[in-house]
Length: 214
Picture 1 (cartoon, rainbow, N blue to C red):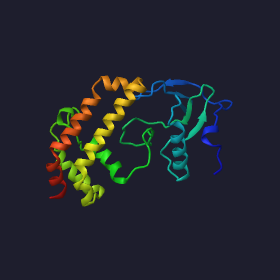
Picture 2: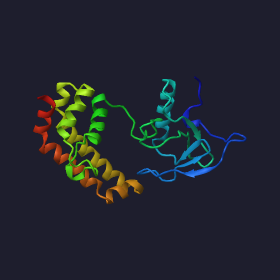
Picture 3: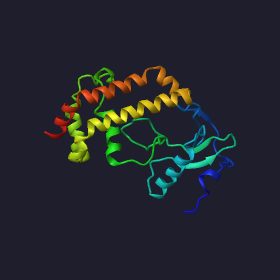
């Protein structure tokens, strides 16, 4: 398929195209996202074109569950196709959050999933209703389902602690340099939550490895 390069792509509304406007729920760091007819308009960001290239790649690969990047409108906003659906609905429509997409290993991606859904964190920060879950049992089930190797299982605690340290530095940097939602999350204590996760992984490294290997 021949396309205009993402950096040159401009979007113009077609005659008769719906133009009703709806303010969409705000994410953590990107305010001002709106639906205009069958499109989503969001502020252009430094990573926008890289994400646009990735969305093109997904389209070429035949993946139908992601938005399509249509270009930038007259206001300079990114324009994407709108996927109708309900967030986290068991009747899944597609994936719309690609801001952190980038080169990674299968283990890194699956670790990030486990971090949220086992979860791998201090029990003090558990979501309401998750306080009594057994993270060690859930981690073993998760690791077996994803086929983690013995080497991956043995290095999980150290890998997780290093990932937490990197996340802490990134969040602190973004809060001080970008402000906005990053600064709000930092002020609300996200740094302390990440630090508690790192400490929990270190203190429980032996229990984690035994749960994964025994």
